[in-house]
Length: 531
Image (cartoon, helix red, strand yellow):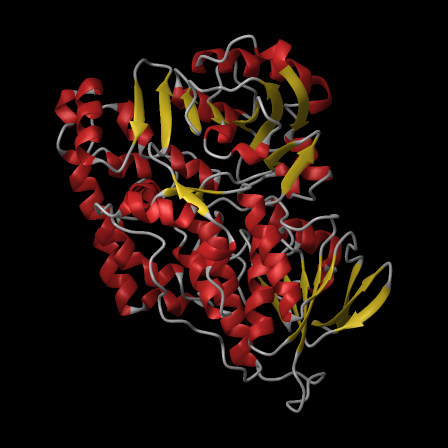
């Protein structure tokens, strides 16, 4: 694509971004810095989408993501526009990263300290001692091999034939699942779960998720699990402030009602305030919902409504946000209870589409790190249980309260006592709420699943193939879901758009590391970042 008919090379291209989620915010910063006129429209009153904050009665919760991983990508976005992420959003690196409590018995405090990890592995299964460091070494190599693919667009089948990707196949082992790959290191299922539950970041089972995603747990150990002070929503809010300071026009509480087309080319949008023309449109809204609501089915070729309905979508989440009296000092910042029958729990989510009586449950107790999130003497508990996306088997108008009792029962496994009496604030989000309130197709909070048939060029492409002048960012396009890759999608898409309009993309040299490889200086580094 070259500069379109609505664009003169004598003026800056006008770009409209639909959705102020993390991908839309990163794209707004990059494109504005490159010289585009940028208007950013957000349907909700506040920015961030799923990476926003919930505030009530003095409590503050992250709505969605709570693990901030692999800061390198976002740091480079900030650096490209002349900012420093560590200055703009102070963070603390967590150690332990999280605690796993296994329904089958035992627990593990995930830490980058190899000796501590080996001692814990020995207590779970002595036969698996010595393989943690081999896992780290081999996945470090795997990330190096696959990183170019995560940072490049895949616009056609022949992009798969790149020499680098072909050479990486023996390392990536795409014929294995994550669990299958981890069997090379750990015989004990509990340990394999400890290094594979991260596939839920993609909304998938480790028994089906492609083996290349064993790098997810590796990223945690190698580059850290971080807590941004104020929560991950603070990152979105600061990005929006920076974008506005740069000259981006931000419109919140103003949903796009219609995309205006000239044939298959997007030429503008319509909101309650009127119409605005554009030279290019970047869609950061949930992909399937945006297509079905905003783009006539008749002008889509590959991603018609019929084809979207045949695609595989991720699981969903049942959320509880609890503001409670008292401090939960016995809990880690992140604690995960793993269902006693993990295989069955995953089947219930992905294939049976029923609610479990023994679900895995994740709890964030951020107050032990960040006392700004609750009134003095109080705590915030963020509780998440992976569940099926919207399905006829589950009527949330009936199951919402019943499943709450199940989740509350699971919290007792974590040592939380007398919880019901101490709740001062409570909010629940079900898959039905994700669907209706957050406009997420069938409540699939992690978007299109990341199976091999829905990756790379088989995902909706960053320069969207069905329409002219339309680009995608977010979890529904390449590289996929999860904050680091969503930020990467914004870089890929913005680079393509700048190239199409003859603009210089704001590349950056890799900035001084916020992250490291477990050196002795890590503790000092974390303190410096947090101060």
